[in-house]
Length: 107
Image (cartoon, rainbow, N blue to C red; front, side, top):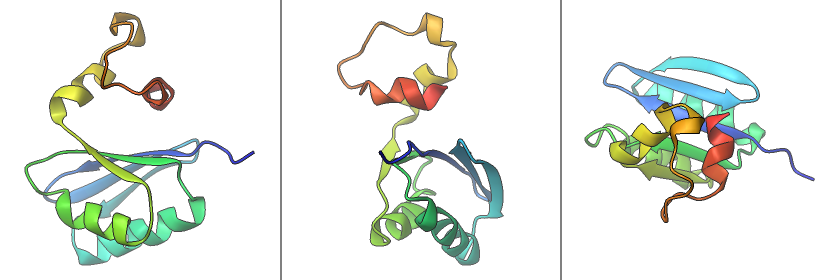
C-alpha cells in the first residue's frame, strides 16, 4: 500500500514554507527558482495531497507549476484553514465541505 504523504505549503511574498508529513519541512524563496525547487522536491515523494492556503493570488504561480507537474494540489480559502489551526477537540464533528482526510492532515 502506498504511504500517506501530506504536504502543506505556506505562501508569502518572500518565502515558500513547505511542510511534508512525515518527512519534515523546507523553506525556499518565493521566486521562479524556488517554485522549480519545490516541484523537484515533491515529485519523487508522490504526495497524496498538497494543500495551499489562498493568499490573494500569491499562490497561483506555484499552484500552476504543481498542477502542470501532475501533482495533486488544492487551494483552500483561509476561513476553512482556520478550523485546522484549532485543537482537534474543538473542531465540529464534521462539516459538509470537510473531507474526513483533513483530520489526518492535522496530525
